[in-house]
Length: 177
Image 1: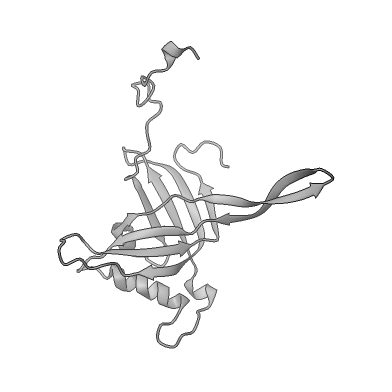
Image 2: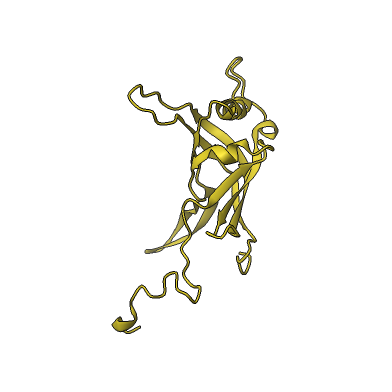
C-alpha cells in the first residue's frame, strides 16, 4: 500500500467500516443470578484469554514444538457494591458454595460451577460478539477496601476460574469459529 493511502479516513467511515468496539459496551451474565443483579453491578472484566501450553520434542539436533493442553486464563471481575441490592451477599454466597467458611468443607463442583455468557455490543445496542463461558466458579473473593478520605464506591473483586470459553454466533459474527 502506498504511503499516501495510510490515513485514518477508513476508521469509522461513512461507508460503515472499521467501527471500533467500545470497552464500555459489554455485559457478562452468570446462571447463578437469574434476576440479573450482577449484570448491573459488574464494573470491569477482561475478555477471555486462551492459550495452549507449548510442548517440545527433541530429535537429533533440532527441537519441534506442538500444542499441549488448552486452558482459559482466570478472569478478574470488579463489582460495585450497592447498599440497596445484595451484590456482596450474592457473590459471597457463590464463593461459599466453593468453600464453606463455617465448617471448612470444599463444595461439590456440581453445586458451585455455573455457565455464563459475555456479550459485546455495538454502539447501536446490537450484539456483535458473544462468548459462552462454561464451568465458571469463584476462586477468590475480595470484599474491597474502605478509605475514610474518599467518597468512591466500594469495589468487590472476584477471580472467576473458567473451564471453557467458546465464541458463539452474534449478529454479524460471520463464520462460526
